[in-house]
Length: 81
Image (cartoon, rainbow, N blue to C red; front, side, top):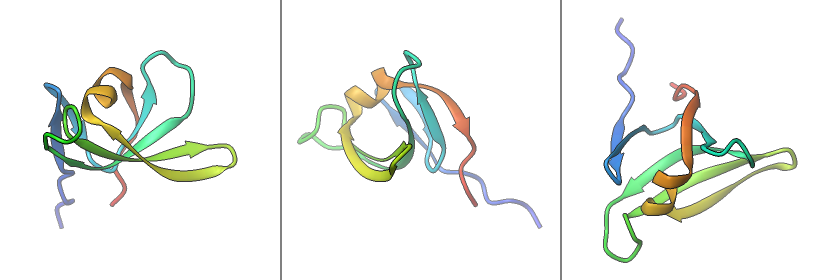
């Protein structure tokens, strides 16, 4: 049985995988799981829903697409099935 392909989105001309965890580009701070992306004019670059992964637990954290594309470095973990 083939595995389900992960969903990919393009945010500010960069490709990302929904459900994957990304590390900060500068190496400082917490990682974030990319939950959802909605293009739109209300948020610069669209609305990005993330799950902030921290030592004291996690929380949902919406950010704008322009910020996400600057912040996100490499993928740390694959999307969960």
